Length: 382
Image 1 (cartoon, one colour):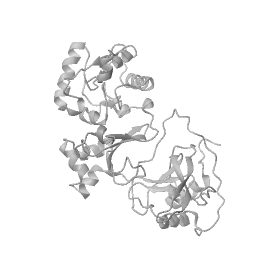
Image 2: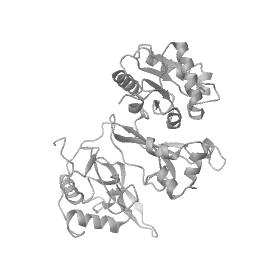
Image 3: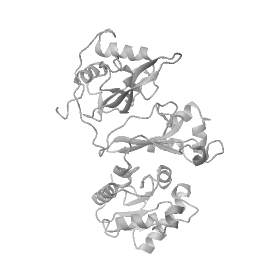
Image 4: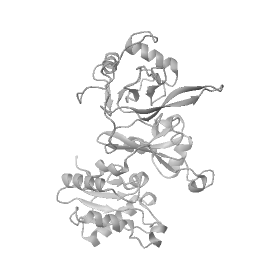
């Protein structure tokens, strides 16, 4: 199989004919779909039918949806779409998903798209060859699909200014316009993942691809009950996301002379584009290597890393006498950064996400003087 050849070359050519040459973008090229057949109950009856559950969609083709006139290419058509599946005795036309307005949520629209793409009656039996593709090796980053409909927060505010997600984010002091335009933050009203539905979606990008996302619950508790007691996750991360391979906003942060290592997306927004969120309290060897390589490439002589993780230490770790997580990461980065790394231990009642940005910067500058390291908040390297 040629690396550049689509897994479903017939479908790809038909899509180009229908949507226009050069208007079809391939994501996860050459990657086979991972799915399994399951028995699903038929609503209103005691019968069951065979259906499919997708684990990883593999190669998909992105185009601009003509129904909702989307301009962001949010219609995903899987390479197995329209191909007869003996397990379900169907063409799996549900594998076309518009993540802008859910335009292909019903069979009639799916079937009409099939007729237009292939210029045949929906009952026609076409023989379409699908190349085998490769299975994920579990150690690669690839573009993933959104969790469902994605309403950028600025568009949601224009539609419904009093929407709970808008009110919640603005009450916390966030500019939803900036969150949408700078960070791609959206709201998901409907998802095929129950734990992503009606949540704020925070995309994670790398190499120009969305490689993961986090779904944030709207609120600081569940009807007054803490998340752990309610059994609800405050953040739910996209299935299969490989935290060991990437950090939030890593590429953009490394264009700055000073990179601030924080814990999560909210900390990153508060500190600014020079921050990268490790999505926890530790940084994997792979991500540490990426951080050092990219920072040294952009700023070979004067790049500095500031470790500004949340100051509170885990109670169990502290009780066992384990070293503080800031100390651990500092020791891991000290040698590869040739000493151009420092710890910023904030007051325990604060974290970067809850601090005023100017106060945070002043503390960083003062600490930088003590460590004899230049702390810059200048523009990034283009």
